[in-house]
Each structure stands twice: as C-alpha cells, then as structure tokens.
Image (cartoon, rainbow, N blue to C red; front, side, top):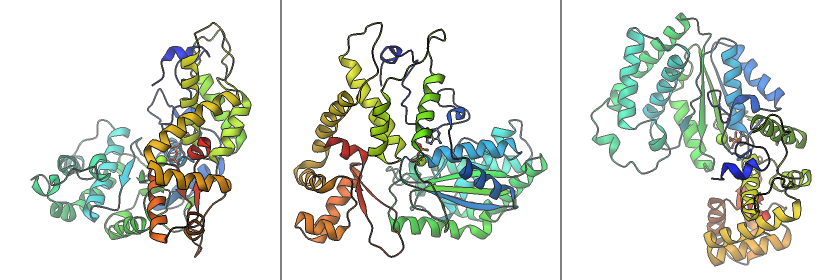
Length: 407
Ligand SMILES: Nc1ncnc2c1ncn2[C@@H]1O[C@H](COP(=O)(O)OP(=O)(O)O)[C@@H](O)[C@H]1O
Ligand SMILES: [Mg+2]
C-alpha cells in the first residue's frame, strides 16, 4: 500500500494505478471510469434484449478487461429494466451440478435484494432458506468455489443437503424469477467468472457442469447469463482484444481526474507519456499487469524522493531500471535456479516471440515432461502465459510483461 502522501505529490488522493475491477457500488473504483469497448458493450446488451433468456461468453487473456466490461454491461442492462447485482459468481471445475445450481440461485437472490430491498413473500422466503443453507455449507461461495481447502465442510454439515437443492432448487429458482418479473423486472442478468488459469480439461469440465443444469435452470425464462474466463466454456465467445493505446491513455486520465486532491490545482500524470507507451507495448493488453508495474515502480521511486513541493513525472529510464531490478529479484527468488535459467535462455533468443513446447525442448535441451513442468512453474509465477489454442495448432507460450520487464 502506497502512502497517500506519495500520490499527493501529484495532486492525487490515492494510487491511480489500482488493479481492481470497476463496480457500480464503489466510490473508489466507480464505473464512470470505464472507457472504450462500445461495440462489445452493445453486442452483449443486444443479445440480452433480444430473447427471453440468454447465455453468452466473454473470453480473453488475463488482465485485458473482461470482468470490468461485464460489470458495465450489467449496469447498462439495469438501466434498461433488468435486475442484477455487482456480485460475481465464481465457477470452478470442482464441485457438482447442485453446487452450481446453488450459486445461480444465490446470484438471483442477490439481484432481487439489490433491486428490491423490500422483497418479501413465499417465493422470496423459500429462496432465502435454500440460499442460507447453501451459504452455511460453504457451497457456492467464494472460498469453497476457489477450492481453498475447506475440506469436509460439505459432507459434515446438516443444512440443506445437496439432494434437497436438486429437488427444490429448480422450482425455487423458477418461482423467484416469477417474483422478479411480477415486480417489474425485465429479467435477471447473472455474471459468472471462471478462474484465470483454468486448464483446458478444467474448462471442459466447467462446461459440462453448466450443461448439466441447462434444462433445469439455464433455460429459465428471464434468466440471462454472461460467463467470463480466459478459456470459454461456451462456444462462440466474444473474444476481447487489447484496448487501444488511446483508450488506455484515456483510462489513466479518467483516474487522475477522479482522484484529484486539490481542485484548484491541475491534476498531473505521475509518469511521462513515453512510460505508458512503452509499458503498453510490453504488456500487450494486460491492463492489470501494466497498472501493477506502474504502481510498484512509482512507489519504489517515490519512496526515494524527499518530498518536495514539486516533483516531475517519472521518466522511462528510471522506471524501467527500478522495475527491472525489482522483477529480477522477485522472479529469481520465486522460480529457483533451473526455471530462472531457462527463462533467461528464452529471453536471450527473443523475449517477444511465442514458443511451443516442441520449440522449448530444442531451446532448453531437455525432454518434454521437463519442459511442461517448467512451463507450469513459470505460468504459476506469472512469468509466462499460455495463449488460447487456435484450432488444432500446438499451444503457444509467451513471456508476460512482468518477465519481459525483468530483462
Ligand atoms: N474498459 C475499461 N475501462 C477502464 N478501466 C478498465 C477497462 N478494462 C479494464 N479496466 C481496468 O483494468 C484492470 C483489469 O481489468 P479486469 O476487468 O479485472 O481484467 P480481466 O477480468 O480480463 O482479468 C482493472 O483495474 C480495471 O478496472
Ligand atoms: Mg477477471
């Protein structure tokens, strides 16, 4: 966490380089900071509006802006009479269909309460009871859905056994949807997010889980689903391309404006324009990585500055140097010697070209299982990413902005 006073040097209340998604209900990260993506926004909204129920997918590399786009589309839909909430439903490849069903029911219940705080009646009560049971079991809520070791909690608990959910869930969901429509909602829009680093097998399994509740729940009239992930669980996803540089510059300008400390003084960028341009090239659309690099680099540099009345925007050379040292130390520590040396060898060929596993077998002079193991390690450390597979081609791997900054 940066001290506010550091950002105060630039007439900013706090860090303009936060990496959180934008939310309608947030003062710190409000939706009005959203830029661009007009076509995608319209496309998603039109599909919701054109049928009684819908299922859409948004795909794209980590940090490119998927979650934030869907947050905005939910607000657009709400402006057109749909009900929704800021909550994001995490889906995983673990668990069973009834868990997913429980999550959907929870999501609709949240949307009903968000749009109609006085909601009451038998449909709402029945839903409340099931949802409470689900949340007690830890089923369908963030922690267990991310698989962070809540071993045993499901089988040992007595509240709402999964069978009850399978039996009653679809009816309770249907009644709750009926209630929402009866109260004037045009429909309910749910936002499901899967994990960033879902393997291909897990993505297939998540798709199977969704398909498993298709007839009972997904086709429910009034229900509109948007599923987000690096790998899509539905066919024909809307694939997000990187925001253009002009949009990224606007994104930053919006943040500076919104965090302006003293309205009498102009807001200033903490970095020179060349910095944004260079990081934009290095991160190729990964906004989260780029924002984090800006925040880390500037925090480190400003920490060295003695607070004066006027500081100049940070320049490219200074920032790159600071980030290079920092990222080298961090990556080397995290990866250990072998993986670090292999990454180094890759960077020496060309940090910007994609490699396949077969090419890395050549480059590293080791067998395929060892390549695969090192890649997994590099991916977990955020040093490498796997690009979405194109047709039958071998998967391509790319050094992330983080590791490209280290060299
Ligand atoms: N169109 C946009 N306008 C403004 N900020 C954006 C936009 N897209 C992404 N961001 C910002 O970039 C960061 C990463 O976006 P996020 O939606 O979390 O990416 P993803 O879900 O693809 O990993 C967040 O801080 C978010 O606020
Ligand atoms: Mg996301």
